[in-house]
Each structure stands twice: as structure tokens, then as C-alpha cells.
Length: 353
Image 1 (cartoon, one colour):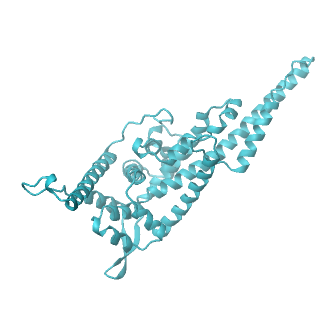
Image 2 (image 1 turned 135 degrees about the vertical axis):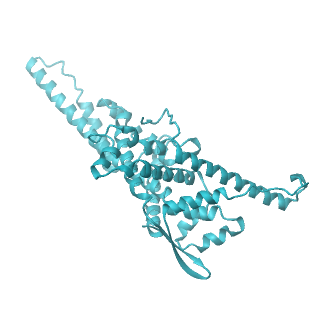
Image 3 (image 1 turned 90 degrees about the vertical axis):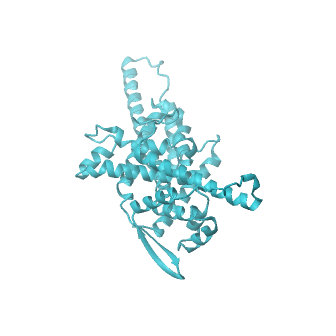
């Protein structure tokens, strides 16, 4: 069940992630957002870097061939152990970053949040405030759904539609948990169609320039500050990112499997009394699309030109026209998202198949 309470918990968790990221950003030497690092991560990485420098001790002065061979073997052992420890750091940091990005994704794609925000934002201008105040929810959530529709909201709607498509066209044919894991988990034994396993990852990480948000910047900067350390043990930034890509791709697939199945439940004031409403995700998306398509283009009376209107009428006409254009654009986008996957191209992020 998707409820206001669950939405509030997502929002709180997301706010904590945002605060952590902002703190890291303020400490960063560059202007880019950095991935979150725990104190233990930083200490371990520092120790690893120091130990790596010690491993380069010159052994040319050792006269004995056997001693040289022994030292060489020990050095290889040290290097292997160092690589293993760096891999553990990458694994831990990948898991942390994946969970943080998933928290943000779960909030912005919440069917209940998108539905409530749509009800408020695409209501008639004179009834927006009344609509928002009628919903029984904490102030922070009301502030969110009352704020103007943004690129994050469009991205959330897009991802929800892509998840619905994945659920109905791909996951619905699976007959067992094993089948699901083979298809949805990158690198799983028997996973031959990796393209499908990475489909939602590609959508989230390559949303289009106008839909970029903090999550994409965090992904881009993952392990970026540790470039020298990675190179010192023979790794590259893309090696570290590959682990994050797999974690995030699987997390998105897991979320998509159930998110559209949960009924949406909320309370609102109706006729002076509290009414409870429950709606399915499918009906919510259909309602959003139908409402968008029903917004009519404003027309001027016969023989009347825009220049002839007074200031107040022009303002009302402009607002109505803007809402019509926004509604029709979003409805057309919903058609596209439900039918096709646009080509993904990126220089900074991996495009998986």
C-alpha cells in the first residue's frame, strides 16, 4: 500500500541523503558534487595509499638472487591484498551510493506523490490552493506537491511509465523467482539478455539534458577523488563504476517489479468531512493522461485580437495558453515513453547496450 506515511518516510530519508551530499560538496576542492564517503572509508583509503607507496621500495641493492625472489613474491602478495582491500572499499561505496540514488528515485517516482502533485498543479488556477489544502498530509509533503511542476517531477513520471512498461511487457511473462533473477540481475548466471537488465538504468542515468538532477551528477563523480589510488592498483574509474552500475540496475528492476502493484491511499476533505480514497497506479496514470488531453486550447472571440485585450484578460489568456501547451506536451511525452526507448548517448556515463 502506497500511503502518505510511506511517502513521508521516503522524503525524510531523501532529505538526509541530500544533507550528506551537500556537506560533502562544501568540503570538495572542486565545484562538482562528490560521492558520499564515511570516515572509515577515508581512513582505509589513506592507509591503502600509504602502504602502496611502501610496496615500491627499491630492491636493487639486495645482492642475493634468492632474497630478491623472496621480496618479489612478498611484493606480489602485498599488491594482491591491496587490490582486494580496494575492491572491498569499492563494493561498500557502491552499495552506499546505489542506496542513496534509489531513495531519491523512489521518492520522485512515487505514484502517490505524482498523482497528488498532478491534481494540484493541473487544477484550475483559482482552485489550486483549495485542492492542496484539502489533502491530509504533513506540511513538508504539502509544500512539495504545491510547488510548481519541475524537471524532477517529469523525470519521476517518465521513470514510473518506464517501470510500468517493464513490468507489463517483460516481468509479466516470468514464472519463477529464478527467471526474474536471470533477467533482472546483471551478471547473474544465465543472464544473456543484458540489454533488458540495464533498460531502467539507462533511462534514469540518461534522462535528457532538461531532466538532469543531482543523482546523475553524483553518479558522474563516483570515486572521482580516488582516481590516483585506483590507478596505483591497476584499476580505472570505470572499473569502480561498473560495480555501481550493476547495483543500481538491479535495484531499479527490483523496485519496478512491485511499485505499480501497490494501491494508492490518501485522505482529503470533501464537503467538510474527511474522505478516504484508494486508487490503483494504472488508474492514476490513466487519469493523468486523460486530464492532460482534456485541457482545451484557449480561443479568442471572433473578431477579437490579442492586442485588443486588456491587461487582466491578457494575463488570464496567457496563463490558460501556457497550461494548455504544458499539458499537451506532457501528454505527448507520456505516449512516447510508453511506446519507445529513445537512443541514449553520453560521453561521461556508460550507456549499457
